[in-house]
Length: 557
Image (cartoon, rainbow, N blue to C red; front, top):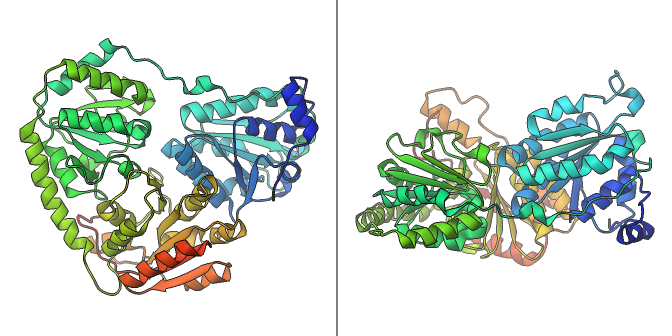
């Protein structure tokens, strides 16, 4: 439902006079000033007054979800997409607990999320009353800030601190509000979003010179890039070409570097390319830019490692670094390019030739995989068809499972696409809520969720949320009737596969029962046809694909 703050509240904000807002009104006005567009939540007894206030204004949409986990995952995905604070809401007790999984995803991936929760009445805090739990202890494991509103007059200080902490540190902030607090008046005014929060810190050239000289002195450089290069993709491309470095990306960063470029090797780890693993092991200088994830088995023992990140705490997390630089790549990369032009460099023709050799063999290998035919449909073929059919600016939310590995192995991302994943937390059920929030924030773009049957079961009822809000998302379910990654690992180790098989519902019929479209594809051409029909329909659609269950190469327990 559309919502709007009372006109007199907005007028006092413009004129600078005391607001006289209630706690509920203050919360919403503060979020509006921070340009929050959506609040994802589930109704509960301790948040009814806030929901009533939401219903009286139109600046912020309330997205009524089916489960608090889905609400938190939607907020996490929105924050990953936009880089700005996203908000979820739950009631006290079980509602707050149900947020935990989605908030853990945001917390471990550095996504700025504000979680608002109701709490029991102030007179009942610390007692055995129903639905009471010490929320600050509960949230401490998945947040960088957690506070209980004990007095309305603390809100003008508490809200900005929570928002600034979430935004600047890339973390989860949490505020618990007792049920009896929402209607109480607040003295003071909400604070607008400060542009200083995005000012670029300057790194002097003399601090960059050792970095540049280290690169000049190497023979086989590799650049490992994460989402942190998002705003400097052009400069990153120029830098890679100028130093002749092989380029490896994390899965979310795949669209940020041309996938058909001669220097591009694909992803890192088992989910990436074997070419990346080979050349990483041969490299004598590895540079991490805007990336922190690095599988332990793929850390070379003989290479010197350099790292650039805006957050100093992320440098050297799982590896020893020779040089670490803290700063913003928007300033650092142009400076490095200027320095590189001043320092003679051979361009490394021998290394470029080696990159071309390894890459060519890898392309032949995945080309053979992607052309596999048959029924059930090979997962590699599914990923090839998705590469060919999705829009050039599609937002693709990829769930957790063996399909994640096949996606990163086969899918060829295009420059204006976005890929969303549960990076470090790797929760099942991420993709569908993520696609919903993507479509809400970017209604003009395709939003596609790619999930296995196991992951789909976790949050499937959020498909009804997409129907409720008329969001034409597409959920592609790879149904291999198993937790395939676990099953294949158990097989590889000679273990019993207890618990790995799934007896699934008819996913297509569930989608239809929820009010959307449901399709069942048993071969590659049906999948292609149903994708096109789904995109043209303008309705939420689910495509169930009967898929094979091959083990990903190098599978082990």
